[in-house]
Length: 232
Ligand code: 5RP
Image (cartoon, rainbow, N blue to C red; front, top):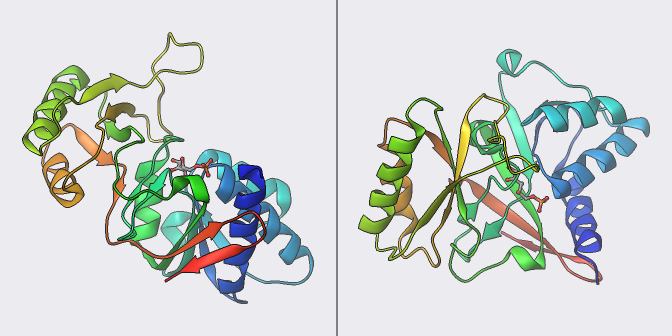
């Protein structure tokens, strides 16, 4: 079965958490996009919500499908955020940022009463680290920050980290986030202690944010071939 079908089951199941009058956080990536499209259909049927988007791409899609957006700085309260993930472990710890939107995704998830993660089965792992950890860094001195990140990862028990500047599709220009930063993709292999990596990366001045989401997700919806499985 296709991952897309599984993502659709997961995104559709997340609609059950949406109620009239809510302010929603809209995640980024292909699974979150499916959710936004389904939400647009529900709005055409009379659902009344408003939303904030975690990326310019999601904002454009929301406008296209008729999901009303409000300025993030005019939001008092976010009830539910629905977002995808690149990896999810058994403790609901996540790696996010494959699409480069991790900073805004984390700001919105952190401000939400409930973060729901929607994934296909392939994203479930016993230990985080198969997916390279994205770290959003200031452009100034990014090579210095890259070296410091390497040292932190080594100190956290990762034997051979590989820290690479993310580039655009053409392979020439660096990828730049919506916030104007670079992304360093850090291939780690299994991460022994994600909480320690979280803490130590945040202490580096050049690190704007990183893709480890710890203690944020409370519901994970896994799309399978014929249905969605809700983990709470
Ligand atoms: C973007 C993200 C995405 O949620 C993550 O990459 C998963 O994307 P997809 O649903 O396309 O697999 O973190 O920054």
